[in-house]
Image (cartoon, rainbow, N blue to C red; front, side):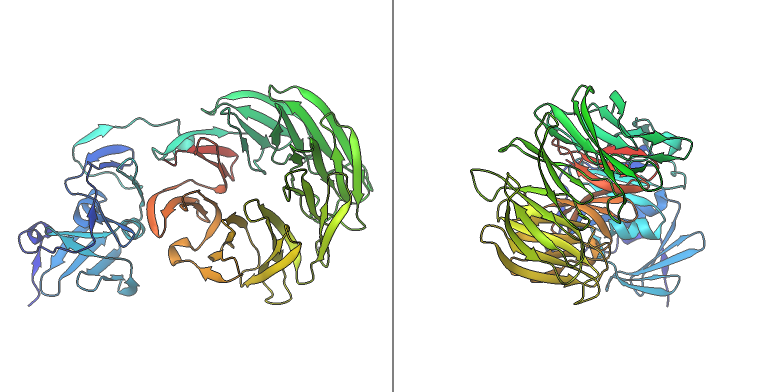
Length: 514
């Protein structure tokens, strides 16, 4: 016979002790829709999952909870949705659709626990667990049910949108944020917004803003700035080209002091805008040689810090990506460039612009490259490869001038690469991969799917930005915490450790990652 009882009675009937379960040993703060509530039971960590007491959170979010004793099943009812959880097997059914295994489901001291992310998804809430602060953050459109609550102050919230307590501040700009910001060790943040470069302090307050690129308001055409670089108390920033007639395009290169005073500017003319030249780019700087390297459409130019041209490397084709400065030896830096997007070469130049080595690229179109100083390896991102039709990575050893491997992925484009101890981590927007030193590919677990930007810390932990704007901190497969920032596009880590997110609606959001 089916027997219906309340979940409160469950505590009198069940006690399950599970090995490998870790309970948070400090008080946990729960914040629901920016209101603090008391948590009567501990948060549990098991198998890399953060588990929350089901009844407590469900009822706070206006869900009805029932327990069916005969088959050891919990039923949640909220609006038109019914969720059935089989406690013995961990299987979950939503509106009679089998969701399969969603993570460990446990009964501990008579209280049912389920994974944090599952609870948020099924109850229509954004739930995040902050391991450092011992805090559960919940945002939902439903009102919080009465309980002991206190007010919680927050930063300024534009458009009345919920803001997690991890958000330190957010700054809105009139122009679009098309490039990543630059954060420096003195706490300043330099933000390209359209043709304007703005400097903020570490709290998001504006220090100065300076229009650099050309802007034609009537035709809505502007030279959009790329990410600046900082060297010797100066900033260097490049722009996209702007049309100056039917057959003329100009791209700008600017030098300014950190207090916002323009040192010099240069305009590079071309009769053709190009396929990749209209994307914001960044110059490169060599401290050893005290030279600035800038990509225009048909080559790379070396400048002294005063803006004086020292040499130019010319190509018959469009230079598709920005040059890199690499430290192959202790005496001087070399410069790496790609002389053509398709069927081109990796070209290594010395500080005098003389070619040292080249390697042909014959299997795809180049979209990016990164260099690993520790292993002296260069990683070149490819798309439209002739091998898989998708994306790929070419790895070259620049210490020995030798090919190491080529690896391929099913997705069409690589969104982000980051080397770590000779290995390479790759986000394709679909899956997330680790490529070992021999080119072997490991596909990560499903919690990593959908990553579009990320940062790998020195301890191996990963801060990942997902397609839906969720920012998660991973330690292995365990999620330490997560928050959601509406419209988040890119992730930059400041020297302080804070994360800087640009959004599609022109905001820069600072997030505490500790």
